[in-house]
Image (tube, rainbow, N blue to C red; front, side, top):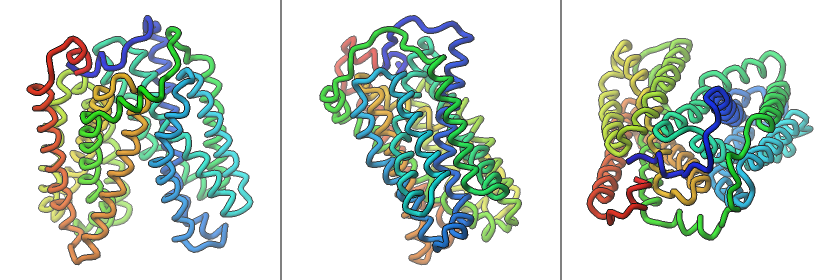
Length: 410
């Protein structure tokens, strides 16, 4: 079975029209939080000039944000378990708005850094809370699609939100970008207060019980798969722009179009991953990880041809995005009694995998490997994720007692 019963319904789902509105709102919440993270990359040159700091110094703002998300995200989630989820989301959106407003009004680098750290505190818990609200809003059989819809907010943030925020910053100043994010966050805060309601009274969270739940081996196995899979992907993706330029021979403008093509593929992938999560999550996860390894390995050869490289980028976008709802599905299924906390920790696992992959790719190039070698290195790492996923699936089928509880979460 899938995670369709991993997160228990707490009441009757809302009417279809209201359900769609809630899911759209939750996707928008994830979109604006993702935009706030990714837009900083495009604003670095202007920040460096305006704040009179070297580019590597302002680049620390990106690193610090990611570190706060990875380390503090699960702790914030744990601290808010006793609060109803819709109220948690309201509180976090309020802090998010305050953080971005402070960034827009920052008088110097130190204030901006503090504002970014405040904003980062909301990142993982907003995502976790939005995702759990989404899967408890839809009926059984549609949870994977709900996950896909909410996680699509991240893809939209990278292909739409961040470029738009960068454009606004280039034309009207970086403060305007953060002010716009704060205004959009405030609008979502109001909409959340109107649309998102608890479906039924629920007992306060028990932090001790949730912590014990996520310490189980099956949770560690899923988190390991997430880290290794993301590391394999980002060994290559971190350096995909220079790879396409120097190996494939694309111009800078053509690379921008190819990255947009990757984003288009990711939209399709989200839909595909959501449907697969509802039907055969374990088999689909193993198959897609194997496909990712194969495509990365093939990229070593296809990168030599422009047309083949373009097609590979599109396919890579589909597979990479399809994996996200499947991995989130498995994370939720591994800890049915701690859905919000395990989702926040899985977000940290995704970030850890990104950091590991980018570090591995950088070290490989520093050690003398060419950019064209990175795809097969990433493929080897991804094969390790295939092995982990296959082993975990086999243990689920053969090693667990067939009790009603086991069946309900698998």
